[in-house]
Length: 283
Ligand SMILES: [Fe+2]
Ligand SMILES: [Fe+2]
Image 1 (cartoon, protein in one colour):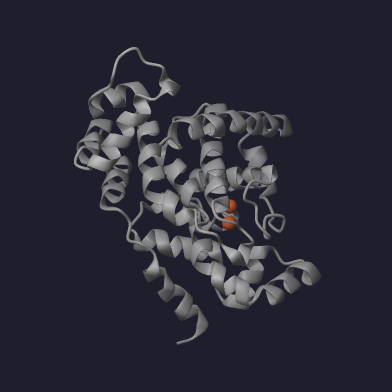
Image 2 (spheres, helix red, strand yellow):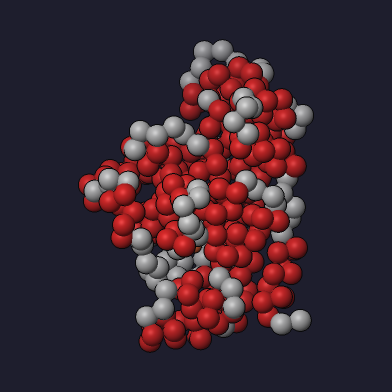
């Protein structure tokens, strides 16, 4: 078995996608389904139901009465927040692993992923678009490939860094050159294996190269790319590769964003991170 085959095979060692996430994403991707349909799926999972109710009844929301049902919780929190609790619950474990190859300590990749996901939400609001749960999901999982590729990057780090430093390669291009595959492509394969909606697969696969994604799903891909570039600016969970990527210079203009907008989004990110920590890190 050659190295690329070994890398692709190691995807199988990841935990399977929780069935509840799979079903929720199918519903989200189906324009005919409603938030209520997703609540019907969630209600069979006692752990997640308990967590949703705990978030609702936390001091953060400061309600005068206790919330006892998922239906009430949905009205109070809104559908996107409900989805965020679901995703947090399912992916925090795997994305919190340390990734030695990228010099990411325990929890660093998770913080970067959450920052990126929150930035897609902040950008969506700034651009006055409809919230899209697929966008938050794609951004949260965009660097999933790093969890698998980390060990291989660690083994070949000198060669990858050599191409980056001496020949001006971006970090993903150097991964591809040395290992035959990069973490974005690998993330795309993971998303495919988990049968994610097409737009999410594309956003993960092309998060460093949105110009290669083609017309299809390009908005989602572009926003995840922008959010990732912005998350890297904060330095949170950037890792040893964080400085060695190129942003798409046309995207800022395509979305009519100015540097000032980026600054404002990053300020909002701090508040959103603090709020999310307040209601998700409880207990
Ligand atoms: Fe990445
Ligand atoms: Fe990233």
